[in-house]
Length: 392
Image (cartoon, rainbow, N blue to C red; front, side, top):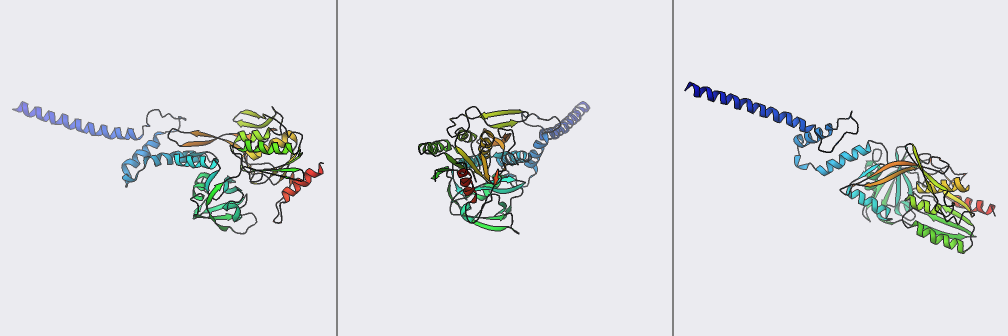
């Protein structure tokens, strides 16, 4: 009997120790799980403990009061957005699948909103350019205007894409913008009614044997539109050209290089792409049919990106005069990387330089002939025409 009792006592002790060991193992295991990243995750920097992310994630899962409200996809997107935003580059942005779809829609040239391009300069959200005959244009918004608030949200800490999502909306709805303009003592409120926006591409006007080519954006059809305009200019024997790039926010690099090719000899550099310690030249593909024409380029604070590339190339390679006001200064290169679930990453990979290797980023292009716009008329265009006539 004593032997049996001893056996059961020993068994209880073993089971007790086993249970305590098991519980201790669970606790240690959970702690390890909290700090263990999933397979295929590696640290880019050995000093960064990436397990902190997963520790936070699991503690939210276990401790957050409204567990049923946890949206894991949104948590993931939020984490990625925060990581990208920490780079403090307004042009490096993460798009959720829905945002990526909206971004592509804008580049197609048709969307619902107020009809303007916005950008961040000097840490403030600004109007880069309002498109002609859109709600933004009709309301009187101008390139360089600072957007202080959208509805009741201050824009100071918003990305460009977050601001765009607040400003855009269904046709017929309204949006309130608080705008500060240079020279104003205090900001003013603008109420704009959203509409279907169809962004124009190019307009050609020939007057007094001068071709005025207004380019609104460098979209996918600009090359074909410019080819039609160029053919008409050649057929009519016009020798003087005004390239109006005011309020043109840019677009696709290929389109800017294609237009530059009408003015710059094949093989000559249109722009340099500078990334880290390497510079890559982008050359003209010709046909350089306007190389010997008298040309001037109109720019202003709304001229950005592709517009600055084209204007800088014509000045450096052909000595073309720039007339108007200083350009925006958007000279960084972004690459659109499509991710596995339909989301995407727009990331800055390089900077644009003019053929003479002058950086466009932040500085912009200073015109050779500075002319401010007047309320009484288009003084910049008038100056361009006057300059061309002086060359005859």
